[in-house]
Each structure stands twice: as C-alpha cells, then as structure tokens.
Image 1 (cartoon, protein in one colour):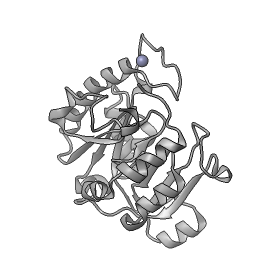
Image 2 (spheres, protein in one colour):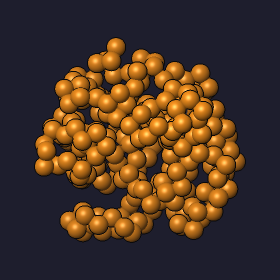
Image 3 (cartoon, helix red, strand yellow):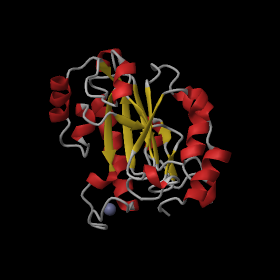
Image 4 (tube, helix red, strand yellow):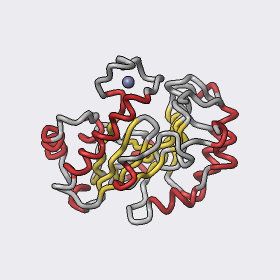
Length: 241
Ligand SMILES: [Zn+2]
C-alpha cells in the first residue's frame, strides 16, 4: 500500500537500508551536483525538528556527509540541484539559485497528472495504483519519443511516477527557450512543464525514500519498465514488508 512514512520508519530506512554507494554509483558518469537539499516535511507536516517545518534545508553536495545528514534530518524528500552555478559559494550564502550556467535536462511524469477514472485525481498525498499502471505505458512511449533527440536517458521510478534524466552533453547547455520548445513538442505526454523548462531545479535522489508514499526512488531500465512492479522488493522499504 501507499501511505506516508512515520519518522521512526524514515529513521529505520536511513540507518539500516539506505546505501550511499548506490547513489554514488548512479552519479558515476555524471557531473557531481553542487547542492543537496532536504525537504524536511512540507507535504506531510511530519518533521523531526519542528523549526524546520515547511522549509528546505540546503547543504553543499557531498557523498561523504550524505548519510549522516539524512539520518539527522529524516526528510520527507531528498534532492540534488541539477543546475550548475558560476559562483556557487555566493549563491549558497545568499540562498539564491536563480541563474544557472548549465542544467541537466530532466522530465517529471507524475501519476497525478494522468486522467484517471478510478481516483479522479484525488489530491497530492494520495497515490493511485491505476494512475501508476497507466504512467508505465506513457513512460515507455515517452522514452522512445525522447530517443529521437537524445541517446543517454536514465529513468527513475520516483514513488509516484517516473523521472527522465537526459545525460547527452548537448542537453546541459539548452537555453530556457529551447527547453520550452521541447516541452511543446512533448505536450501530449503528462509531464510537468515547469520541471523540464528548468524552473524546478531539484530532482529526487535515486535510492532515497519518498516518504509521501513510502517507496524507494529506484532506477529502471527501459527493458524493465513495461513489467515494472510498484510493489517489488527494490522499491518497497523493509518497514512495509
Ligand atoms: Zn488514479
């Protein structure tokens, strides 16, 4: 079942199950991000430190400290910033991340954005199996559409849909306008245009816990996608088993 995770469950996951080496491996052929951001509990209101409620806590991205920070904050969501900044120190000090030099191109296909006769899109916290099943088909076709323009595409099951990370060199330097043109071309798919346009910089880190629906963000190959099981052992945290 899909439900929010309690703080105790988040703790169990990050202490006993989470593996930073898997994350490191996923980023192996990519540039290391500059920013690591934790949403401590915006949607669920469940946070370890009540002063952080509704905030994003930012750190310089570092594999070495990642687990320690996750265990300390027990976040609802863990993200990296896919933008690169010319003067990162100054952006970080001012917490102002508006101008990027390059940005990984990414697409977000959230099952919320799919027309569904079963749940009638019941709202943000609710995850619908029927929507997810439909999103698999969309995701498969979307990948093949992206393949017309790009060759290095990573898919990640986000807990509530799929993320597509485009790793072709040329994609990092696309302007906002070019990203908007791509959105137009892909508008028949249920993707969030704010993400691919570059407005939403933060992407969920694979192998972290999506505490809204208690699923582990999990990379999926195109071969696995068609028969992907939303309750398989890779995506279910131990506390649900
Ligand atoms: Zn639905």
